[in-house]
Structure formats: structure tokens, C-alpha cells
Length: 378
Image 1 (cartoon, rainbow, N blue to C red):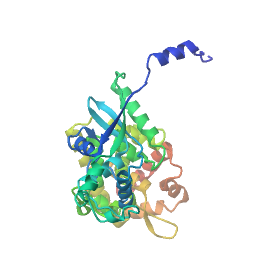
Image 2 (cartoon, rainbow, N blue to C red):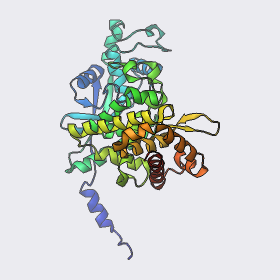
Image 3 (cartoon, rainbow, N blue to C red):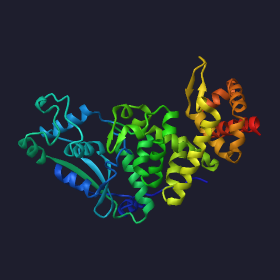
Image 4 (tube, rainbow, N blue to C red):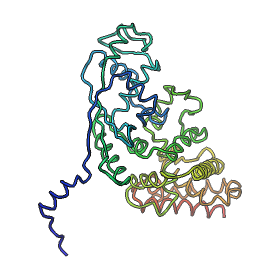
């Protein structure tokens, strides 16, 4: 049946109805005001300790402060009014975080070219006239309002769309960084917590959070870690929860992970606690069963390299077989040998390496590895 043509009148009526049309406000804020808004929690998702990993290094942050001092035009930040007089930062988080951290004396200026006299100084160290000069500087903000959106679903969808479109240029955010903003809440906090588990960090060769984070300070060793810097460690944790539910494995991987985040937004404390236990038990059992080969795939040169697809398969399989934990640990040598033997076949190796990375391939990978473990132990 041919699709009915939409008339120009219908299009005009849709537009005039204000369908998904946003309202905007524009304001300028003095730098000390920004500090106050963050402290009073009016601007949220700005600097939630170490959950949002900043990409800017100290030199770039210093140059941004220098630009403010010189009154160089700064692009506006974008805020979303999630509730009355409470705003989420959709774009400009690094600029605002840099302002807050400098005023809070959390870093010293370095690498300045026009004002080298200020290198090595934090806000308190700067002469009073410099402090007053910065205090007079302003940041423009575009505030996106959703007053005409009655449904929370529409607000969520608009917020997500605007955030994605704002982050299509410059320092592009990767999917997990976007999820961290869009799906903030207890489940997202759990991902960060589990990514900082000592055993998880050791297995993934990430400097331990417990040893490299003190308050809001992150050591350079951890900050520069490839998995930590762009929140890939949190995505690795998420993959376990997303792939443990076979009914969720459909469509592209990014959609599978997004659905898992969205589906767990409303989890209560008990639900979060249950997921924590499930993940940690699977992680500890994997280490007990696979030892030094945990999540590691032997390549053509004979080296054991960390593999996310193998992690997916081992974690999901071990979780499904958790009632047989003692047997799995007892038969660990047989399991290791049979899995390694099976992975010598080109077909299974290519499947586990992650090529192709379709939902069908993911299901096949999980099923085959589970079957190998089950056969070896049971």
C-alpha cells in the first residue's frame, strides 16, 4: 500500500503546534557566579569527582585561563534546565570545570606564552589585580528549556539529541562519555565503582583507582591510561550487564549498551546491590578459573593479549554457570586447555576476536565459549 502523502498544511500545523521545539534563554555569568552555582548544586553533571574524565591537559587548561584573563571571546556553554532553576551541563563541561578547579586552587598555571609571569601560580597566588581581572570576566550560557514538553520521555529524547548534536565537533565524546552524561544515576555510578575495583583494574592493567585517586586529584599515571581517560573501563563493565541478558542482544552494539543503561535508570538500592554482587562474583570466579590467562587471547605470535570479546564471553559464561563455581575452579586446568585448543581453530578465533561484531556473532561467541567451559567441567 503506497504511503499517504503528507500535505503542506499538515506540516505547517505540526510546526505551529510547537512539536519538539525548544525554548532558549541566553545569560552571561561572572566567573565567581559559576563557582557559586556549582557549590550550591544548581549546575549538575559538571564535576562529579572522577566520574567524568577530563581530556584537557594542564597546558590546555592553563591556556584557557590565560584566554579569559586576556578577554579573548569564549564559545558559550549549553545548559539544559532539567527542573526549575536546576541545570545540566550539556556542552562546556571542561571549560566550567577548569574555572572551578582554578578558583579552588586545584592546579597551577603552566605553559603560558603571553603571561609567562603567572606560570606556577594558582588563583590564590595571583596578584590581587589579576584576581579582580578574572572576577570580572564572564562566560555566556545558552539555556535550553523544555517547558513545552509534557512527557518525561520527550524531555529525555530531546536532551539526548541536543547533547549528541552539540558534541559532533571539537573533542568528540565517545559513546560511554555520552552515556555518562545522559544516563547519570545509581547504575552509572555503579559502573564507575566497579571499574575502580582493585581486581578489575589489575586484570585490565589499569592503575588502581584506590591508589591513584585522592579526593578530586587523579595521578597522571591513571589520568593518561587509555581505558580510564575516555571511560572505556566503564564501558567494559557495562558490556557484562548488557550481554548477560540475551533478549537485549539485538541491533548494533552501541544500541545494546544504550538500552542497558536506559533500562537500569530506575534501579533502587537493592537492585544496584544485587548487580554489584553478580559482577564481582563473576570477576573473582573468572580469575580463579583462568588465572593469568583471564580475558587474554593468544595471538599469532604466541603472546597473550587482553580481549574485550573474550572478556564478554568468559564473564557471561561464568555467571551462567555460577552454581557450579567449585567444580569450575577444580577443573580450571582442563577448562583453560580446552578453551585454548578450541581457539586454535580459525573460525572460533575470528569469532572471539570480534569479527564480525554483529548481534548474531555476539550471541554465537557467548554460546560457544559457554559450551566449551561446560563440556570441560561438567
